Length: 287
Length: 130
View 1 (cartoon, chains in turn orange, brown):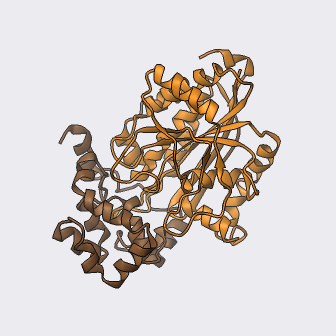
View 2 (tube, one colour):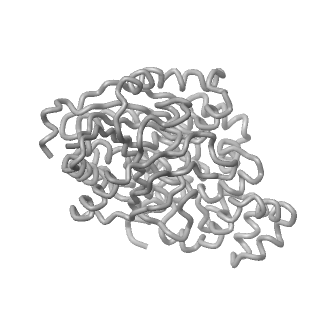
C-alpha cells in the first residue's frame, strides 16, 4: 500500500529560483528568506519519500490562452524545465512516476474528478522553485514527482472546497495503490500578493497567518471561503492559496504542524511555508 | 455578467481575469506567447508596429503594447502572466514591470515591499470605502 506521510506548502516565486541559480542566496535581501528553509532542507534530507505529488500552477509556460484545464495531472516519465523566456532553469529534469500517475488518473476520474491528463509537460518555476527550496541544487532530484497543475490564472479557478475534496480523493487513491510507496503532497503558491493594477504590491500578513492556522486546524471551514474573499484579503494572485487545500485534504482529518516560516517580501509576494504530517499514522486507513 | 464576476469590480485597482476578459484578450495574449521564441523577440524589437500588425488585435490593444501601458492592457483582456513575456523581452523583472501599474516609481515601490507591502487598509472595497 502506498502511504502519504507528510505534506508541505510553500510559495513558488520565480525570483527565488533566479536567486538560487545566480548564486545570490547569501545577499542581504535574500538571506533571511533562505534561512527560513534551512530547517526544512535538513528535515527533507532525513525524510525522502518515493514520490512527491506536487500541486502548482503553470504561468503561461505549458498552457497557452488556447487551453485552460482546471486540473491537469502529469502522467509522463519525465518533465523538462520550461523555457520561460530567459532559457530553462539550470535544474535537473523532473522524473515522473508513470505507474502511480496512471493509478491516480483512473482512481480520481472514477471518483468523479474529471482530470485532464498530460503526457507531455514542461514544468515552470511553479514546480521547480519548490524543489530547489527543499532539495537545494543536486545533480538529480532525490524524488520522483507527479505534477498536478491547477488553473488559478483564469477565473473562475476551482473552489477551495473542490480543491479540498480533490485532496481527499488523492488520499483514497494513493491508499489503494498496489505498490509499497511513501508519498508527500506539496501545495504551492501564495501567500498574499497582487501583480496587477494600481493595487499591486498588496500584502496581508494578518490574513496569511489566519489562513495557515485554519489550514492546519479547520480545513473544512477554510474550504468554504469564496473566491471574492481571497481576492479582497489576499490579492488577485493570492487566489493561488486554494491549491494548498488539495495538500491539506490529502493528509487526512488531523495533522501535526512540524514547522512554519513566514517572510515579507519575496519580490512582490509574501512567502509562506509550512510542514505537516498526519497526526497519527494509524489513521491512514480513515478517509 | 453574473454576480460572481461583477462582485470583483468592488475591489479597488483590480481587474480579475475572467473567462469574458480571456476571450476579449485572446489575440493580445497570443501575441505575448509568441515572444517566448527568441526569433520572434528579435523581430518584435526590430519593428514593434509591423510585428503587432501581424496579429488580429484591436488598435487599442496594439497602442497599449506600444505604450507599455500595462493597466490598459489589463483593461483590454491581457493577463499578467502573458504580459510578462513583453516585459521579459524588455529585460524587466516582475517587480520593475508591476511597479509601473501603481503610479509609483520603482524605487518607492521596492521600498514599500521591503516595508511589508501595500497595506490592505483602504484597498478592500470601493462600495464600503474600506
